Length: 218
View: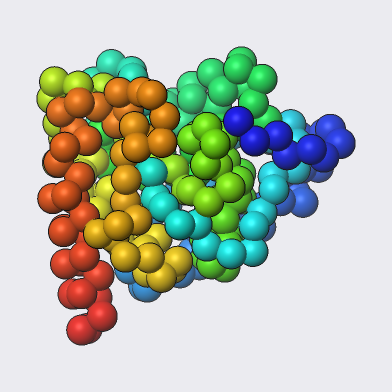
């Protein structure tokens, strides 16, 4: 876990300092291949307990996680927002200053910003330091996929949004998806992103590469 090391401030002050307006960030980059990403303000996040650390450089890896939660059948955006809030509460309970990962994708395919400032940083080609991969937080961006995938695969809407999100991030960060997209288990002793899901990441990387190629020829 990476500690941000700054003095504690009020959640409202930190939200104002670390995040542009919700509408501005939500609209920025649309039409450049970015899927709809709901900002922390849109899903009702609490402000972070410490100002996020931002590296003015890209990450080296995009890490795919799963949430270890139930495989709910609710595809609504309201459920996605509930999930994002539940994750943040759980991570606060661990003593973390905010949601650990940078982005969250619900089983309905809705993409939510996780750690405050992650979307604005990606738009600028920078990265917020998360708390999602022990020993590698300084050079990784994490995407949390709702559900548990040790025996089943994620549903199609989630996978489609994951391809879109990875393609956009690889483009923003100038990363090769064939080497940059990795499971959490690559770095830590964990079954994340699932014993059934993780072996399929080569297919995901190929899909992301094709999506990037299709955009570059438009």
